[in-house]
Length: 81
Image (tube, rainbow, N blue to C red; front, side, top):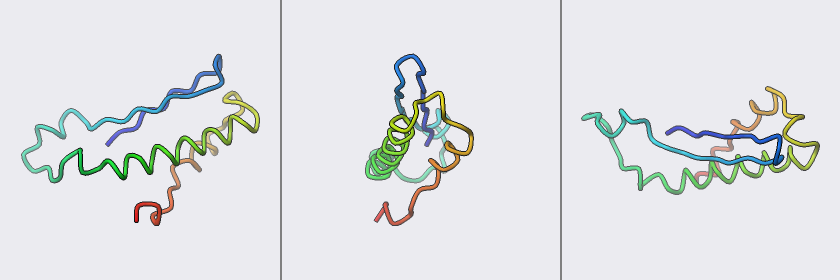
């Protein structure tokens, strides 16, 4: 699964999109179904949204640094329970 985050300094906002790699659907060894990942997608989107919103509220998109983005990918595994 891939997440794309677009940050907009002009609007001081962001959009988040997710997709499964094109090769995933044609892989004969794949397991699972994208529809079965809805809960995980929702948890990750909520995590990214709350983290990015916090940074925007604290100073705007222009103040984001690489370390801030690194912290966004640190997700609590308990959130998936």
